[in-house]
Picture 1 (spheres, one colour):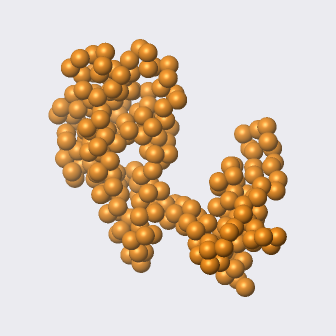
Picture 2 (cartoon, helix red, strand yellow):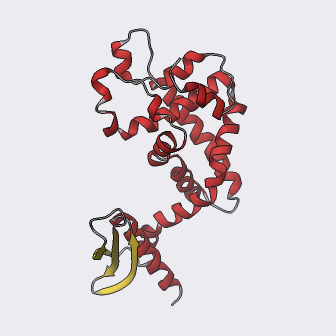
Picture 3 (cartoon, helix red, strand yellow):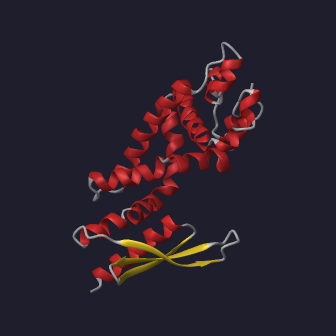
Length: 227
């Protein structure tokens, strides 16, 4: 058994029926190439991705009875995007350290963030095949319920640039970095101004320019609504 897998079983109260499914979920293609007969996580990833879309979509649907399909899609996307799944694998559940790579691939693993995303999906697929739908649904409800409110907030903020564009009739909006604070530290902060020509529409801060632009658009929307 892969070292550390027992802790995963304990964390999720899993009594495995087929240990090989979980080992497959943590096996990269490079390892399979060196160890014939050890399947990689590719097929399980496909299955887990489908389960995430369905179960998390169901959660989002029930939690937001007034939202239309477009808003629901954005919320689901915020919950199942690669960055979120990689965070689960790397920082929350420790999946990243369990992945089996070939000797040559081990040194490159840190550059392949998508692998940790894939592994989370593969794990979900393995749990489904080994424990059944109700069990995997219970796990995902436990993981995602605390994030539902945050997903709504994230989806609204992400959509702020397109919402502002629509409010102004599709005119060209420029996002200009007007200041950068603490440039050489982990607390770097960008201040961005949303502009229409020479007119300042709103200002936003963020740890990167993308976040600052979203916040600048949100600020512009608030000012426009308040007019």
